[in-house]
Length: 295
Image (cartoon, rainbow, N blue to C red; front, top):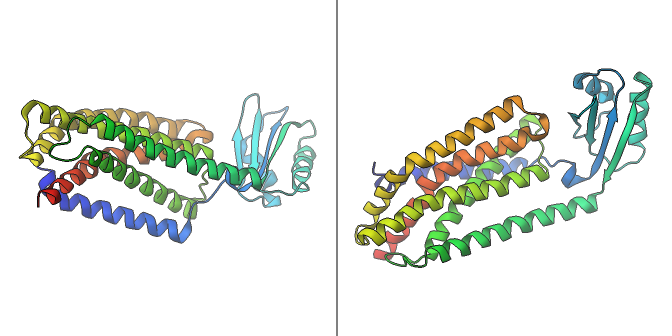
């Protein structure tokens, strides 16, 4: 398996994926949920059994933007929609009680656009701090193998793989938002941060094997051969670990509730491309830096 020698194909595939994702994001952007736009969250309880479709059909006439209905416990539902007008929520309650007089409003929460802006800002800071921390950690962890390439360049390779995974995941959700109305909120940001950790973990497994082989054999002159050997020795572990996680996420997507469905979908996309990028992006990029330094 000579992955490094055929890196032009992985560069081509990754470039196509990233360009397509960037185009999707630029054209359509992400469909933001009420966490980022402001809105209303109401939890209502019915005395009789009511399905989610019945609740949706009932409030549909109000044409509530970004409407999301989630089943809760004891025949309750959480109704979320985008609106900052206090007049809308009484209309929703009135409509529900007109059809089901014994309906009980357990709670109502308003998320203002000011709070939403703060959430967006904090989410952005969380992503930046995570990237900086990951870069520093990898540079420190690989400080003993500054030959044949500086240790900080391993961190650069890992960050490139991270950016690759995140952009592609964002591109998918820009597409989903445009054609399927899927919104992103705080759970989506949590999924991105989880992808950070998983992708870096997978990359470090391969980088660590490169470090072991360099320290053991001193194979700095044939660095590409050392990378290929390290990939062969660790690829089975990476694939098997990823497959176990993929099976769990697929189960959650198909059999879990709507609350975590899209969180799991974001994780699934990120982990699939994270496994790919750890092998075909991060290590290949490090080999390309070595080749350029050598010249």
